[in-house]
Length: 185
Ligand SMILES: [Zn+2]
Image (tube, rainbow, N blue to C red; front, side, top):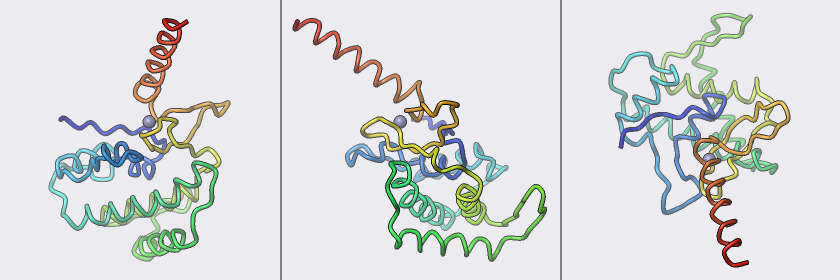
């Protein structure tokens, strides 16, 4: 199937976490980046890699490590829980590793440069924690989706990763249930 990256997280680090589809359903879970063509598309869509040249397996492995480390810390935060200290420690190591190799380009605005794609992604995870108000971090209301996003709506009412996707499915389900109840009444 033709993969079109959906960048709905509100931050590139969340879009990375969301490259796992149906995260909460063991039978349906799919790693979109496992396919090299998809990985290239995702990197181009996010601007992490301007050209469409090949990506090394090492990059994929590093991205997956970064993605799962970020998810382990972000998912509890999204549902109002606390991440474990073990997961925080792993995240800390990952960020330190990237910062050590990065060079400071500008202080205002703050811009870091990293040569490898993996380090750029690690830095973006750090920037998510540095720059964003994580009290706005949410997990999609769908039972199986598991995508994370920053709710930037004024009244903090966003419930779905995508209203066209998970939101629509929920509306259709509610509609169907209402009709069923109506038929039984
Ligand atoms: Zn969703």
